[in-house]
Amino acid sequence: MAFLSAIILLGILIFVHEFGHFLFAKLLGVRILKFSLGFGPRLVSKKYRDTEYLISSIPLGGYVKMLGEEPGEELKEEEKPMAYNYQPVWKRVLIVFSGPLFNIFFATFIFVLIFLYGVPVLLPEVGEVSEQSPAELSGLMKGDIILKINGASINQWGEMTEIIHRKPGNPLSFKIKRGSDIIAVTITPELKRLKDIFGEEKSVGLIGIRPSGKTFTKKEGPVSAISNSINRTWDVSVLTVVSIIKLIQRIIPAETIGGPILILQMAGEQASHGILNFFTFMAVISINLGILNLLPIPVLDGGHLFFLGIEAIRRKPFSERFVTIAQRVGLAIILFIMAFALYNDIVRLITGKQFIQ
Image (tube, rainbow, N blue to C red; front, side, top):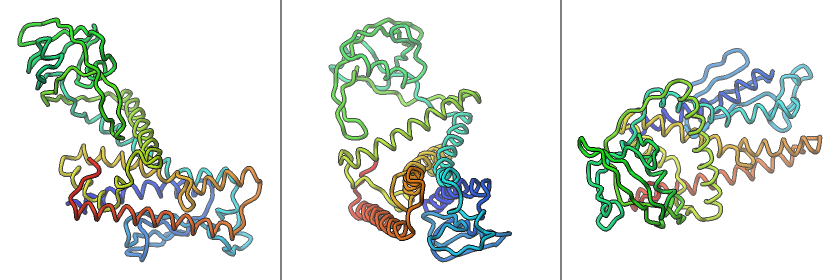
């Protein structure tokens, strides 16, 4: 089940990414020689007009091979208008950028469907009250439902915690439903130091309660679903970029880097929790794939964009020798990262240690 889930997830995301390159190349008049899902030896292939469509044996990526893309490729004069390297910089930028862009758009599309379908949201119902805490001292009890804080209506747990976290040391007026009674209490959140997802400490206000775990399904209308999806995509994108920066700064340990085995495990786990979890995971991985491909490493889309930007400034392309050397260096970097990620995966399997929760 885990293997099948991972193959489905990676297959869809690779197809979306490569289809972005494929579509824009076609629209801009560049001839496509090959469209492959996967690397390595071909498993299945079919030629249609100028393009050979393949499914290859290593499902960890894919590629679109365009006419004139290879350094030193000999072309007939009549082929040059359809060759990638003979296109103006702006066309090549669009072709390269379209792959990551399609991954990010695809994630937004998934989030729209998820919000339309409905997501489980925690009710603002108290499940547990800690001893010596501000909540207990104020008389808050298990089963109490938070209706308002400082006059603001509370419909879900997250709305309540957002207010409490921002107001350490400030008295807050709570309106609570207890059975059939409506009760007013004042609670002052304590200042606490907690670690965020990056392991860095931050100050927040806490009152010492946990949710009951009860949820309701929240469905959005079309306009709200699109708006929320754009916001969610932006939040995940920012989180991905910040995570990369924290990784470079060594705030996040390198051991958290995961490879194909981790993706296989997580895909299977999310699929076992339901289709909603699986597609949410797919959207997050799609954003990760799009952003990671924009890193300025030769071979990746970001590396191509970096060189195209310099070419636009210099007003002339790099030499074939320079491009070849840069691609080899970029490939070496990618292979090293993949090997390191695979090493981390194997260590997790052997030791049972979980670096990613």
